[in-house]
Image (cartoon, rainbow, N blue to C red):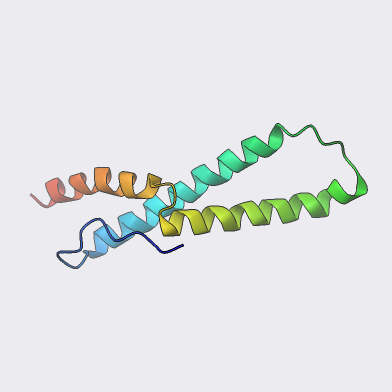
Length: 95
């Protein structure tokens, strides 16, 4: 999957905008991890030796990896929307 183009490609991004983008992607990753965690919590699978602590840790690491990839590629688009909305406040602060 290829990353989406930046929101504004006409000019280089300011350090503040780059920081905002990183924060928005981090927040999107957090949201995706929570969605995956909630979906997994509704599982009716019973506990077995193969679904113990090691498997739970592996599942958590896999979910974190998926969330990081999805947020950095813009797969869900949360980060792009968050960045676009919050970037309007960056311009008003500079006056």
